[in-house]
Image 1: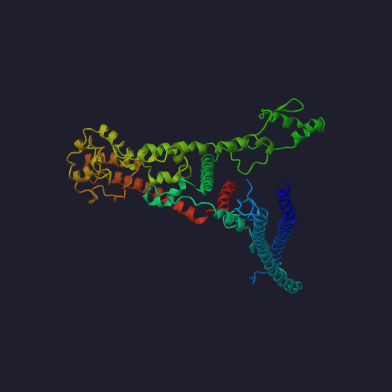
Image 2: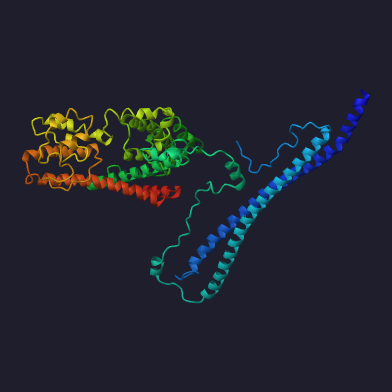
Length: 75
Length: 483
């Protein structure tokens, strides 16, 4: 019995560092995935605000152009 | 159920059956490491997708910004040139100039198949496609796509569109009625003058103190809208609200109760219509193409659930067999009977023998030989008999003169005046007297024809002009507001 346990125990004992290694890798993969998601979301929200500002600017410029031009065609 | 946009692929690293090996733990370790590598691969793919999306968006914004910068520069130059020169002094200039309209483009079809993000589209494509039922479409008689009975993505839009168009028509009719009423009673003056809204009521309410003002709102929801008891004991009544509540009327508190009930009234009718067209179709065998196309969106869904797939087909076969009259003909057998009974003595109800191709011209010279005998045997083979019975069928626009309209798919109604006038024609026998009647006949025929053509044109116009939510809604609102 003791003989049986020893090699098995040894194997299990040797297995643990492998598992730890795999665990480190997988937790880092999860961190990367989290980072990508949050980066994506923050970029999208910032781009959306930019979009709003751009649209507002475009509308103002349209109005100003209409005020300023005297029937000339805008290129 | 929320769908995940990007799913990293090998979800479970080591949930697999192991091959029979001696060192199992090492085996598991190796398998797990291999799966980790696969996960890294899919992760990098999604990362590339994410950055690509952001990149394209940022690029579009960059181009917009650059064009804006150009415009600003040009404007700057213009404005500096502008100042000291002449100004637009004239008043005419203000009026004749076209007013400034900002671009009123509305965003539409935002959540369309095209705007679906790529990873979700890939997930969608892993699903099975619907069965190729459209291969059966050429075998259908009513010209609808067979797949629409199985799955119709445009069903709700079509339903809504028809409802909107119906509402616009109703609005036009009301308009015409109003105009007529105004025309008819120009001298009547204002029978129902609108009540002059004064603030007196509000001040009266506040007279006793601000705390007592809620009495009006309390009475509303409690179900006594028509009467209001004011503080000093006088009784007033709430004005009635217009039935057309599409843009909600300004008196929102009193209108809130009638308008939801009105809109709910609108909704039940469409489901209630479902049973009607189905019965119609079952009863008449093959509903005429025009009739069913008008009812289209309400028609397809009830048919499958109400009948088993085998059901409708044997159901259709028997009705056509015994009384073959194709549906347009159903209307016609009924007019001839009254005609026949009404004038037994007059030379033959001319219609029976020749009605399928041209209901009006059996009168012609060869007194239809066995019209009387034809009549009882009418139902079975209407088509074969008339061709045998009246040899000069197609041709000779007979005496009556009016150009024979292509009256092949005659509906029930137009068939009634022609047979009647036909019976009178043989009496007076020939051309001379029947001129007025023939003019009337031709006018009637043209009138009916005109309406049909108009309807076709309207439908074509509708299909061509604007099949999207914004145009339909804007048309409806325009008509409603011009009332």
